[in-house]
Length: 460
Ligand code: UD1
Ligand code: CA
Figure 1: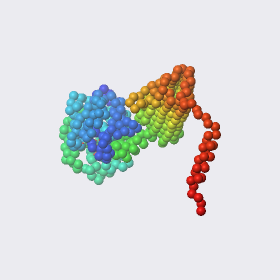
Figure 2 (figure 1 turned 90 degrees about the vertical axis):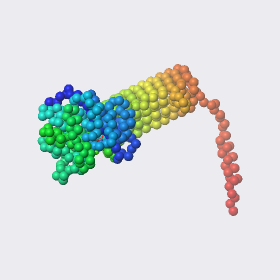
Figure 3 (figure 1 turned 60 degrees about the vertical axis):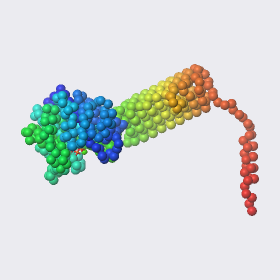
């Protein structure tokens, strides 16, 4: 059927998101809850984007302001108030699409993982030679209970019926309505105008457009997906967690297929936009927040947390490393245990092996930061930068009080609190003079033991 598709028909998407989302028990709009660090709405928009729609309308009711903010103009918003059913919801988009002529794809904001390929298949079917009035995306779930049923034979729909309105025979039918539909604008508004609400729920059912078109003698077709997961709706926190788990499972498989070793795949959490190269080893319990790019041949040891970070080839991260936004780890650099890097470059081969904070800094190639080095970047009001030259050596437990520049090949002695710039090649030692008193401690202990003995109560 795909070969008869008309790829040039303009496309509009209508995303339904006016439902209350009561079961989420949330102040955040249901479709703005995240999976892999990205909202359901953005997952759906990204898939729809692959089809290059010329228009996008989101139908909103509750939490409309949140949607408006999240969309930032990427789609028109049509208000549905009150919510009188799915058919009524789509009708609310008519005004925004008054000047649109082409294919309309109806999506649900809380069904975020429909693949672009499935959307394409629906549109291809819509534009096939037999000219169906409506194309419905169907699926066969394990438990069909609550879904609307599609009574069809040979891909042609005879009737759509909601579970609450269905007879026992109809309920026995396993083909269910995902809710998603494709309809040409030339048919859609006319069909919707004829939908009534004389049914078990007193709602204007979108599904009724199929029955109306059938009565007109038009064909209505079902496209069946064999991937029930892609049409799974998310209505509760439990379903959100299940969707997250399924997403992660797929992403882990993909990362391994792309050449990364995941030592314990189930313990690695990716973000929607994680980029990870070949021959990368990811040890157990590593978390990728948004915005991470990892080049080839990188090792990320156990319990590391990365977000907004770039890691170049052959760098070594962790265990227990934290890379925060703006961390730019260059080739062969080493970020060891309990080291936090924020908005800072670790130059090629630079090392911070233990217990260090590097923030708002540039660390030159080959520099070595000793255990407990801290860039003191914040004075409570402003952030300041620390520049460390190539091959500089910062002794353990040093505080570099920004703004400050440490020259190339300089040495900062352990325990220094450095407030002024250090020239290239200089040794800087900022410590108090040492006091040496041989035998003092022995005398002290003797004295104290004696005092303590005098104070003990005498035994009888
Ligand atoms: C709908 C379908 C049902 C299908 C099921 C799949 C109808 C009549 N029924 O049922 O056949 O099996 O989805 O999940 O279409 N919405 C609005 N405004 C409204 C009502 C709903 O925007 O007035 C939105 C919701 O936010 C949601 C979507 O439409 O994204 C589906 O609404 P929901 O109430 O879950 O539909 P169901 O009754 O479950
Ligand atoms: Ca539902």
